[in-house]
Image (cartoon, rainbow, N blue to C red):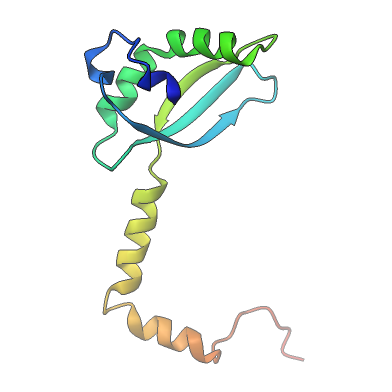
Length: 118
């Protein structure tokens, strides 16, 4: 998001902010786009996302100038929670109460339920 680094935004919540865009999903008709973001270096993303959504019209205009598209999609920003989800899964896998289940799975002795028994 080079546009943030230019200092042309008037929103003080976006002044000096660095953002990582992790994914962008564009609708099949190319009319809408959702950008998933996290603050660069971590931190809470709710205030950041609110500020980015307030400036979405400005971003759309800037993208239109730079990308020379026939139609520039409307942009909505959402926090990317996938890192939080991955961290939670990692915590669960490290839990000592889960270790016995993981050890049993490594031995390959469990029934997968896929056979007919014949």
